[in-house]
Amino acid sequence: MSDVLSVWLEFVPPLQWTLDLSTALLLFLMLGRQWAILPALVAEAIPGLAVMPAWVLVVGSIAIWGSVKPGIRP
Image (cartoon, rainbow, N blue to C red):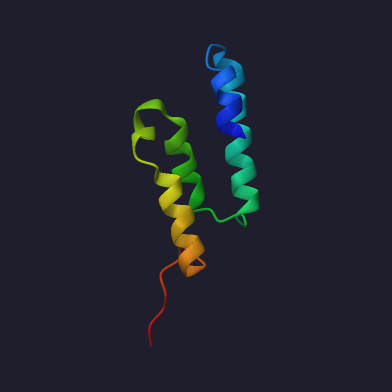
């Protein structure tokens, strides 16, 4: 939904930034307020860094392993 709205807000940067921040906040809350997600979401919002989908990798790791924290081995 955010990407669809983003197409229409491309030429109005303040609204585009608001949409990006709202989407990042919503993802942060929906994914359990895991602080490791925030740097990836910020990287996605910066135009030059959005080439690599960092937040997709972080969210994928959470989906697979349940956390982004390293496991403690005995």
